[in-house]
Image 1 (cartoon, rainbow, N blue to C red):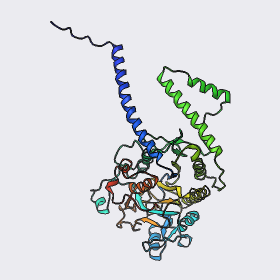
Image 2 (image 1 turned 60 degrees about the horizontal axis):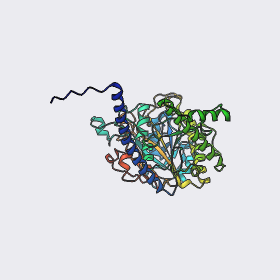
Image 3 (image 1 turned 90 degrees about the vertical axis):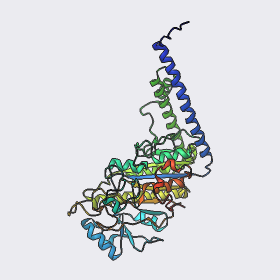
Image 4 (image 1 turned 120 degrees about the vertical axis):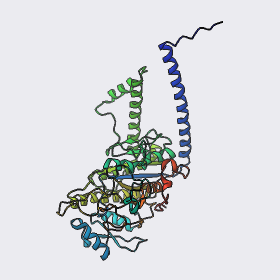
Amino acid sequence: MSRSKPMPPSRREFLRCAACAALGTAAITNTIWDLRLVRAATASAAFTDYKALVCLFLFGGNDANNLIVPSSTTDYSAYAAARQNLAIPAANLLGINPTISDGRTYGLHPSCAGLQSLFNSGKLAFLCNVGTLVGPVTRASWQNKTAALPPQLFSHNDQQVQWQTSIPDQPPRTGWGGRAADMVYANNNSNVSMNISLAGTNIFEVGTAVTPYNVSTTGSVGLSGLSTARLQAVKDLIALPHDNLFEKSFGEITSTAIANNTLLTSALASAPAIATVFPTTSLGNQLKMIARLISAHGALGHTRQIFFASVGGYDTHGNQLTAHANLLTELSNSMKAFYDATVELGLAQSVTTFTASDFGRTFPTNGTTADSGSDHGWGNHQLIMGGAVQGQRLYGTFPTLAVNGPDDTSTGRWIPTTSVDEFSATLARWFGVSNTDMPTVFPNLTRFARPDLGFML
């Protein structure tokens, strides 16, 4: 007996089956997601202490060649000869006293009295000549073109992303701060994200399970211009059943945003006032709000937090002496005030602040006049501050300050001797990322020799 050929499904039946298949896929995806959140919740429950990481991103490329300067007669003479009109007078340098030295003496830019105080009291360390790397690079491999290099090496946008993701050789989807948050997921009792930005959107804090929450320097950003009655009307409207998926999603997102705003506003209102005086600058205001958010961590239900703050203007191709002095004054005074605030809160041991920047700048000047500057470099020096930092030390390797020297590409751009991966992994390990999870957060870390640089207690 012959069998009739089955008829193709109708459009309605096809869509019904496709929808069922999609729901099945979604169920599987949600199961994986739920398992990840269960794992993350278990990890967060293990933390009985509190820790916070604070990233200060100096957009444009900070000229750390003038932040920390060798001050012995021979070393300073070489520095002054190369820097010419950009050289800081030796008599103006602020002396620092490293507990472990490479035999050189150093001084800080005269605008950095706050940083000098923090360093000499053991609360601040420098990491020398750190930068974006795919793998180790030497001058020989650079010249022979055999080294794997980060793409778009001297591009602002690309290097900013690579610093924040620590994955220079892959398309970026998440940042290392976001991936670290995924691994410890410490939002025990809060809807407000453990990753909070005072500087708008950034990829550094983007994870898979954790997404950053943007806050202004005056607090949470809610719906403005609405009376109590109108706000309630909005809540009632979005609470209605919605068949349209867009309307439903929009309502859920708006409802969550309103709830988060209420929660954060309430937490800040109940947090203790901070007596420490901050500079009334962009960075000072950001760090003051971060201090307030740290003081409210208990009300928010956080045992771990990651913050992002930033300041621009470090792309000093011209007028560098004046512009850079102003920028470093803001940085030094703001960081000192922030550290003092963590002491006031009794949390200095629990908060670690670090700088990051696109790249360093060329050692030679790009002109001979007073308004000259420097161009895009590579390796750079970064700051690490906090009560848990083994301070008053210079970590990494300070470059040989010589154009066409052993650490130079050829134009006064220092080849990094420490990778962003090593730097960031040391911070993440202190924060609570386990050795098991480290490859997820830093997939390229095994390419480098020092997964822990030792600057954290």
